[in-house]
Image (tube, rainbow, N blue to C red; front, side, top):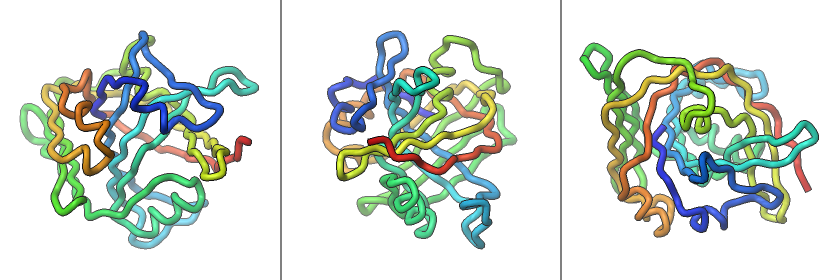
Length: 224
């Protein structure tokens, strides 16, 4: 997870109706996140050849006042996966902005600073997000930026008619490795639009690697 401070005006056009931007100590973030999914099931059913796959997404953070209090969630600007069926299912079930692209992931473990790299092909070139970890995974610190980034358990997707779909994401708190270096190589303007070019030209405020866990994504519910 590579995290960049961003002007909220850049994010305003992407905020679904009824949501508001969430901030940590007055700062707004956008995160470039690489996931590797294992043993995936769709509606409880394993799909052959679609159980293990990479995903690269660009997301930011919002909140909504629900009946149980503030619900802190994420909005995805764009998500890349290597499998057409996964992208189609996500678009149909959740309305998410998924694209199918060639992708690859590798990790070097037996080195002093383990290296993780996600690569995806778009706009006629390969893009990459790579980090080197340091130390050992640690539990989240209450009130920290790392906790803010990881502890959002709702997803929100704007609909074309002005409504919004809300879905819950369940997983235990993740332990995280800090990183000694992070590098993004690519063309953010071509991937996400011109307003993001300056964001990715800056140094990330933080980057870390989450240990991961079983994750459940609930069915979406429409919010009018």
